[in-house]
Image (tube, rainbow, N blue to C red):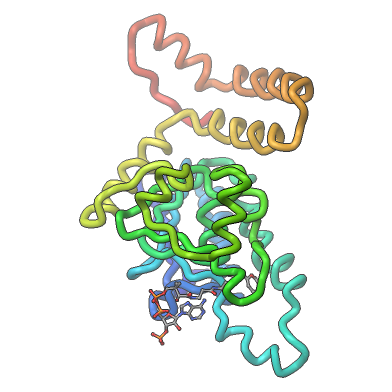
Length: 262
Ligand code: LHQ
């Protein structure tokens, strides 16, 4: 079903998914998180080859909609355990297991679980206007939506702890310098440049991208010997793709490869 809170468009092999509650800086409520999970399923069902995730208006996402859970405080408090497991985790697991790369196009502020969402993606492109604020400690919470895993892996344990303790916003330039984002693009044509990048990903060896993601995730919690075991199996999988065979043949024929994601 179409949702107003998350927009979906398929173009040139890319699922363009836009968080769309700009009046609250695309803060998440339950309906929006369901819609976001549905968009991931839809991209997969339609056989698309890259998801491009961004926010409408001036923000990427300000995280949990704090107004949406306001009433729960009068009734003993929101059940964060249930909210996380039932609403957030399916989205985050969905991203990490989606059979195509997911690119976050961080167009503006990304705070709390909004920042976590960007960190869970495979690639982060940032507009010059992007800002990252962990936000959690400002309201007495701890990092969630996967940030305890993703943030220290991207920026190191010390800086992750600093960002979580201070919760001060980090601008796009500083985010690039610390490895929090992969590329900063001019604000004026950010949507077009981010889309152009996503189309390149979609035209790439998307199966190999997805196997690489899985291998990196697994390697993060393994010793070296175990990683060697895992890579052998993963490379056998990549080596069995049509894309690999075609690319080797193209190389030998001195032709550019045309990947099909198979
Ligand atoms: C908002 C929000 C917002 C509602 C801006 N909610 N309205 C938590 C609990 C449950 C389970 C799962 O996990 C989580 C994880 C989390 O995400 S906790 C962290 C929640 N997020 C925050 O604490 C961030 C709150 N927002 C801010 O600190 C600022 O708005 C930032 C730094 C994001 C942007 O600042 P500004 O650019 O100065 O914008 P603003 O503050 O003026 O916001 C614009 C409007 O958006 C404003 O509404 P208004 O009616 O006055 O125009 C805000 O109330 C609304 N808004 N974030 N999370």
